[in-house]
Length: 332
Image 1 (cartoon, helix red, strand yellow):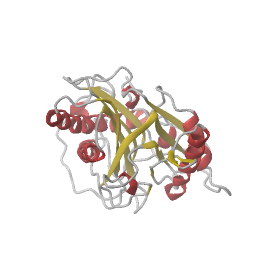
Image 2: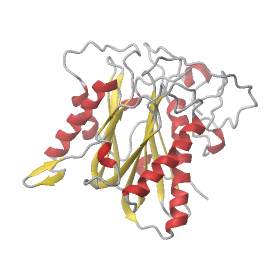
Image 3: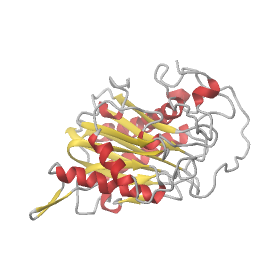
């Protein structure tokens, strides 16, 4: 059986660290995932409106094989500047791809749109390089989820969004984790009731323990946001030794978790994507079975992480949407 790791966070994958930085007035933030050493990474995009940095180099045929960090940021295209601050911090630490006497930190990332969430966006200089640097400085095994980091100003189709994470340990001993910001066009909950679409995969009471929803007739949904305002972006990670091609297949499989936890997902108005990370500390014992189970576990962890991000979002005075807590009661 699969079971959650001790933290039920992506940092249950040994060696990974996550840092958050946010600005309450801005109502936005950045989250960065890094590790003790460079790691294999890939990405798969399924949404129609993505915003990314350095994702082409993650293809299996590209020269660079490892990256130093991956970031998820608010701010729409402005949020891609977070990578500049993260690169500076990594360079100061002596990290990066070696080119002669120079080190170039490799930092892919992706953004969500949170420019219309009520925060003060009238900056004269982009705040995102500073947020990226702060997030890197804060990177640790324990980190906040819900209204934190990139999830600080996130919204969904009906409730406040947030940053979510979850983990599981496979019978083989391999660990899988997910990290996600839920800023979706769709809903994580069923209709107007508190039950989560991801309920069949819940571990214990990690998002309320309400169980699956009663049967609710589903009408054809109408978009509650405009083009470009939505996106769910995620990272799934494992301690397995994977090639970039194998990591890509894990990212593809993880998208199933997004579809299980958000209705609808992967719309033309969303920029949905999943990064995948393999730290390489545990070799595959059975390449067929282990690869099969890694994809399944990544999807399950991502579905759970999405529900946790919405469930643990906290209410604030300038919210444009209710949080799950304010509408349905405090978390159990």
